[in-house]
Amino acid sequence: MKISVVGVGYVGLVAAACLAEGGNNVICVDKDGNKIEGLKKGVIPIYEPGLEELVERNTEAGRLEFTTDIAYGVQNSGVTFIGVGTPSSADGSADISAVKAVSEAIAKYMTGRHVIVTKSTVPVGTHKVVSDIIKANTNHPFDYVSNPEFLKEGSAVQDFLKPDRVIIGTTKTEIFELMTNIYAPFMRKSSRMIFVDPASAEMAKYAANAMLATRITFMNELSGLCEQFGADIEKVRIGIGSDSRIGKEFLFAGLGYGGSCFPKDVKALAYMGDEQGIEMTIAKSVQAANYRQQDRFAERIIEYCKENGLTQIAAWGLAFKAKTDDIRESPAVRCLHKIIEAGIKVKAFDPEAMENASRELGKAVEMCEDAYQTLEGSDVMAVLTDWQEFRSPDFDTIREKLSRPVIFDGRNLYSPDFVAGCGIEYHSIGR
Ligand SMILES: NC(=O)C1=CN([C@@H]2O[C@H](COP(=O)(O)OP(=O)(O)OC[C@H]3O[C@@H](n4cnc5c(N)ncnc54)[C@H](O)[C@@H]3O)[C@@H](O)[C@H]2O)C=CC1
Ligand SMILES: O=C(O)[C@H]1O[C@H](OP(=O)(O)OP(=O)(O)OC[C@H]2O[C@@H](n3ccc(=O)[nH]c3=O)[C@H](O)[C@@H]2O)[C@H](O)[C@@H](O)[C@@H]1O
Image (cartoon, rainbow, N blue to C red; front, side):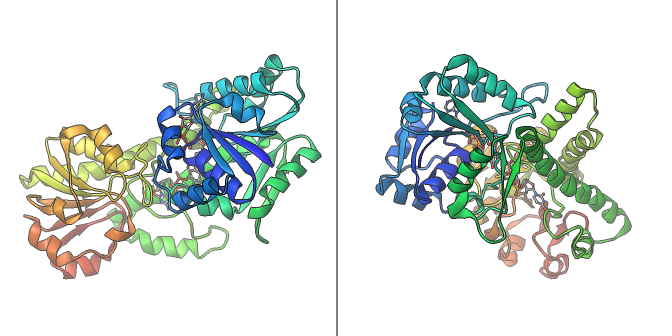
């Protein structure tokens, strides 16, 4: 099939490369000329495991091409996926101006019947807004599909190639069948193609992200209580996660959730509720509790440093989670902003996110070549991102290099007994 994908970010580029891997001819369109020029030369603008090989293989096979020219993309495909950003506006609503602009452009350049598929996360009701824009800008027939994306950064390629479920929001059976064919190469026995109306598809996306953010936040609040009572949140997690009604995933307490989606989507859901006069009290509480959790961790570090006259910390991790270079709404970055504001110096290391974090944190943080270099001249250490390579460090070196052997672990990566046995004071979450 001939497909175009507009937006070559975490969602668009992954979707395009995977659709090409499935045998389709895919044209990637983005307004960012630097990204497109880079991609033409094989430079992947983001870090995402497995993506580079996929892009290279499919570009060489002639199934994947890159352009800034949306007219070319639309005119040479029958289906266009929209994967542009929908960031938070100042009032918390999702800013869908890019989706609207792209829809208008698609409509203007359509030369015949076209299918327009929105992968971007858009407020419920956007299908009507976009359909109206398309109608107003073309005389050709079209079908609109709401097809929210559920991939996670860091495992985006695998998530796309092996989805748990694909939700297709359309009113027409034949369009559901077309989408089923597009996704056929990726469906396993356990995967489900789900046929719903566009509003339910749009709502399912917000419901999924808000539900996951709520689970994490509930565990984070419990972690504070565990600390007071001397209970261990990790044991509580295993205890409740063994109940199949609750399930094991997304119950890890930490320094709060971050990323480009949970924070923005929880906010947008709260906004949608306010607009409709139905207050989303849970979403609002989750949002507030999440920021409290992030700040609580930073404050513990600051307080400890102030009380003990300490002036420099070694920070391990900057990305909002492991296996990504993304620092959008990173709890690590928010935490470091607070620490810097308190007058404490920071040396930091992250395997992938230092370039992005440098832009955000500026010279206030000294970036290091490896994790151990951050310990030079530092008093205490803070683990802020759950990178695999931080999980089994050389505790002897950590103890020897820090002026005061203390670890603040915002990700519960280590066993408290083991770390204590290494002669290091250990502060983690909910234990
Ligand atoms: N990042 C993630 O893991 C996931 C994101 N989503 C949703 O997917 C959407 C995209 O997210 P990301 O890929 O993270 O965004 P991103 O910011 O990484 O990429 C968006 C891309 O769209 C391009 N763009 C913006 N306006 C454009 C226009 N008018 N014409 C052409 N290109 C344009 C930008 O230059 C950029 O390359 C958002 O709605 C997000 O909520 C959904 C699931 C997962
Ligand atoms: O809409 C989106 O963009 C995506 O948002 C999340 O994916 P992502 O943000 O890439 O990352 P997650 O793995 O969900 O982690 C989000 C945040 O929650 C934190 N987290 C996650 C799990 C957990 O148990 N505890 C916890 O604190 C992570 O460290 C991270 O800061 C969802 O998991 C995806 O299904 C969704 O498609």
